[in-house]
Image (cartoon, rainbow, N blue to C red; front, side):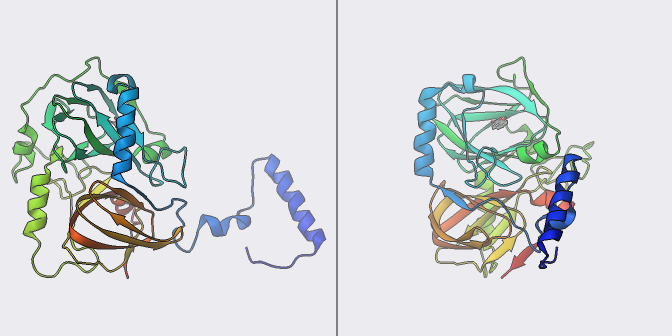
Amino acid sequence: MQVSKLPPEALRQRADYYGRIGKDHMTPLWEVLGALVPPQPRSPASAHLWRYAELREKVMEAGRLISAEEAERRVLILENPALRGQSCITQSLYAGLQLIMPGEVAPAHRHTQSALRLVLDGEGAYTAVDGERTTMRRGDFIITPAWTWHDHGNLGDQPVVWLDGLDIPIVRFLDAGFAERSEQLSQAPLRPEGDALARYGANMAPLDYEPKPADPTRVFVYPFERTKASLMGISHGAPDAHHGFKLRYVNPATGASPMPTIGSFAQRLPAGFETKPVRCTDGTVHVCLEGSGEARLSGLSGDRTWRFQENDVFVVPSWHALQLRADRDAVLFSFSDRPVQQALGLWREERL
Ligand code: 1HN
């Protein structure tokens, strides 16, 4: 609405009119149009960094207060400071830090929300997805696509911690959430460990396997060893000025994102390398897997600079320019709602 000077009588008439139509559940568009259709994204989310040293201490404290079985999932949700109470780290994504102690199990269930895990700390835990277990090793990227049965257990002697990322806010927005608990506490293995990776994750596929474009991948673990080897293998010549050496995780059978609602990435920044600033419409969660460095952000929620080191987690809201610098060779994992935005023709990136 154009700002104009109105005589008090006209203002009163309008206020009276808004009051009367309000009683009938109507409201004038011209009062809200600018906010509804902003000239550029105006995310209500803010930027934040969680230091792993503090996260670890707090999640270990939860380990003394409640068992994994009682909690169903013993997780501390990472809530965006500007979206408290909404269980989300960006408008569209949820993130949390999960702990499983030696001997514990997290019971089998399934839901229409898709989940990813990034293993951060400890050894000896497994995740089972639709009847196959995978041993969780640091840096492994593991997925549980929508409506797949999943449970976790720790057969080792160390606490194991990982980051969960889910599309909970997207499913909530669409009112499409279903969930079911299994009668089995833990799934009985139907196939030996490694079966899915051999069948779907080795540049081959079963003869009769013809996935549809949006099907999630049957490869449910992307071992860090392979990711690291790929990042090292492409680390020749000049790194991309805005992204360093960066790859996206894919469903090898389709080339699409492993899951339709969450995109995920791994990137290597050589020691001393600094990216140019880049902004994109997908609010993104980053995790430092190796090395250390600095992240500089600039956007509506303000400008800030963080130092990051191993296992630190930081969130960059939509349309905030991000610049990264590595002190020591750094490997970063990140995830966002990019495949959703791309499917809808909404995704934009601006290299500054
Ligand atoms: C869930 O199933 C897991 O399976 C973790 O580990 C976090 C948050 C909300 C809803 C389901 C898991 C979750 C979750």
